[in-house]
Length: 234
Image (cartoon, rainbow, N blue to C red; front, side):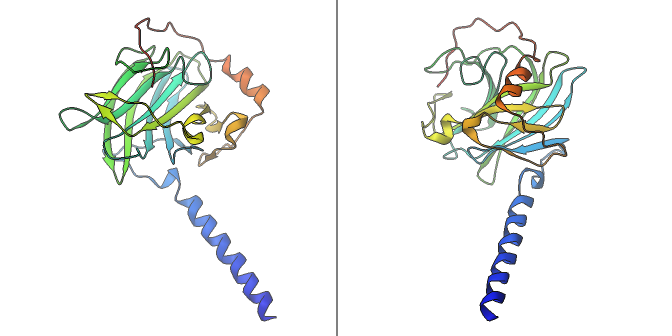
């Protein structure tokens, strides 16, 4: 009887611990300047989360991306890829400490592998800001997506070093290589590619989809004209 009671207690404690862990996800983050978002998702790699509010009719996306860089002088990135899954083609926002010592966000059109160069991206941006809080960089911004967009390919990343104002290459660990997926901005659910596993979401609707349905959803996003500047990735 005592053994049974001990096992029952362990099960109950484990359940409480799991619940507490889940409750401490993206929905527990409070942002500065009274920023509030209608949905959020704990991403499956790099201890990161995406927070957003979106109006499909206008294509206005307001977002916050939160991730801990490998060290305080590192960088974090979040991107939309309008043409494919993966790094090439990404329209990226990268946040890091600027040469003046302040946190800032720059835009990058990723068309290849190698050192990155700041440049315009396919989407109109505004409100680009960043801050360093409790070991993580919080990156804020607004994107103007094509009207009617519902699902986008997303890529996120972190790196340890910035040299002369230029983010340097990231690690090539599995969690770095697998930090990509899709996000349904309207239905407030996140689906990731089969190699990534399932991403947790604090939103109301958790419609995770099969690979075939994900491929169909990619076709819903109109492809904007991409900048032709010779910009490369990490």
